[in-house]
Image (tube, rainbow, N blue to C red; front, side, top):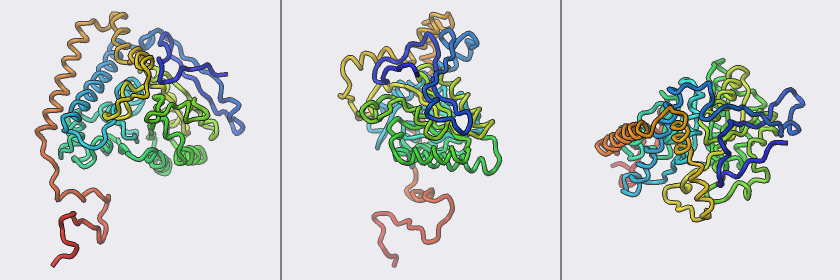
Length: 385
């Protein structure tokens, strides 16, 4: 029987070892009976003996970049420079960086609305991402998408989606296109834990399993669907187990350990690439703040808030790197100053960028021209004279 994991709303699992647990489909009769099998990958923290200091510092820097970017985004929201909804990756940096480290530049990514960090880790500049949050024409979606709808075809980031689960069927469709064309790309689709309760999630996993699609579904389990705990909303709170219903290999991993996430994601991605088989990966990755920037998270107890501080992946990795003699306190300060300066520059770039022209409002409604497309603005007359 699989070992018990503490709720994501409490302290995350200890990092003395890297652990992934899950199920492995092994033939036409594989299914729920195998869904308690445990798999462990052990190594000395941080990152195990095989990891170079250069790699670990690069991961830490990328996590720090995401943290400082999201903190600046939260500040900009209070300054009314960012409008609409805004959901941050604070506390999920190790998961974001680990997942993106497992992908090739040619692989596709579909995300939900908590996607700023994924865009940065996919190689999109902080300037273009911040400009999009500000609604400026230099942003990745030319200022018309905002926080929840980042899109960059060149980086193969095929959208953040505001509708819960809206990206999941589309990711399955993209994987079908890859399979149909005989390509070797993999589609990764990430979602929150609440998405696993909707019909489109199950329909997409079922189709992916039936048609052997090269797609990796990733559930970012931060323990809360907005303010409701997974334990109160899911009869089976270990969400990776849902893959067994579709004879799909699935694993749960400590989402606060960047190397553990990367290793688990690599295994999932390479299985999808080599065998054209779908995979379900669950990362337990607590978010440090509320559901969005306007959520004060009053549903959390004082004890839970204290536990979250101990689960901060950035602080823990910084301590581990220092204890391992890889990154001194002064080195961290210099790195922090460098990253903060880059984020300040991104915010300045966004501030100075122009807003999109009103005339471009309908330019991207359809991918190709549509006869009779309505392009009337609210103040325009219904009929032209």
